[in-house]
Image (cartoon, rainbow, N blue to C red; front, side, top):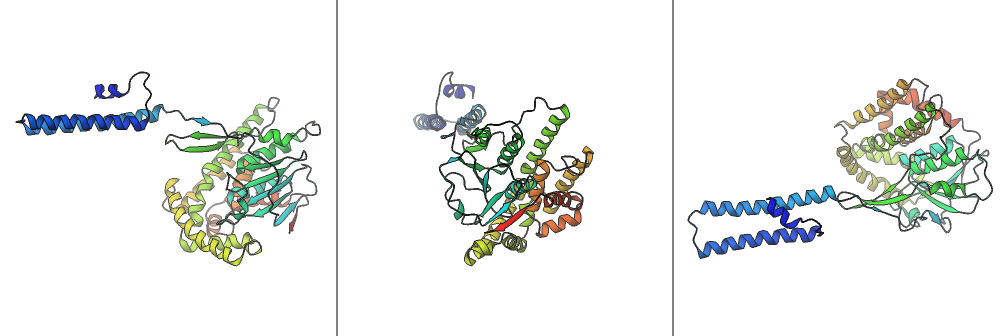
Length: 408
């Protein structure tokens, strides 16, 4: 076995996996052919010995191939591929779609013109809206058709929501993808506004460059993309206290938990059965005001096609994320884990202490996306998260100064 592997894996030898497989199979076939030729030229008395030899050679060849594949996977680097265009977030002009409604805060001093491409009940979109509302940042909304996604055809490489179009005071048009990156970049911008700046310093452009998108190849050789630093707020922490730094790390930890754990309990719950899936989509139709944005046939297509598709997908997500057979229990347990962790900190009603921080807004946005669904009502009955935490965050958002929503 050792000789067989050494025959193919020599020091300094570089060979593609395809050629390696071909070479191993060719060698095994040659050995088998020689064995058969020897059998015809000189009869072998012991048939069992001949069959055992053939089986050993075949097994050694297959084992060698398996060993090589495992060796290659372990040694193969996770290649990082730089983006073809490091400034791919810069657009020449904003998309031509006009917002269907706008949310305005007269006290907004950011100087940014924001347009959010969203699904009204998408948990990631709800996260972004919660952050914008809490900090009093004005924005327009373009509602995207969840099935046809006509409103995203202008985006060449990214067809998910949310997408935030940012028009800066310096005249740049930026496309921000991924809810966590959007929140981090905007919060960094708001935090840094108090610092002395000069006109034309391109602050938003500078911040967006802190969140580069990189491509890499996973163990299976598939190309994946990832936004770097998306949970990081870009601000100077050198003068901050130890307690402040710990708060930043805690906030980052729980924002990751919201995206990697909590959000995955939603779909299997709101699409638990086909009737429940249809009821959820009808709720989305009502909350998202689809009758104002889409034709009747589009709404029907989205409700029934979407419900069937998500009902089936929800079953797969249940297995992928190792949820309990009764998926409601997974939702209840993670909700109680969040609430218990706040109480253990003992610093206030929120993970941020006396007022919500970015992790509170993230979890709130995720839960807000299913309000009106059966799963939300069941959660309110079987967990204290709604009464003891969710409604308090909601009240903070309602107290945002001078919020004005205008339907175009």
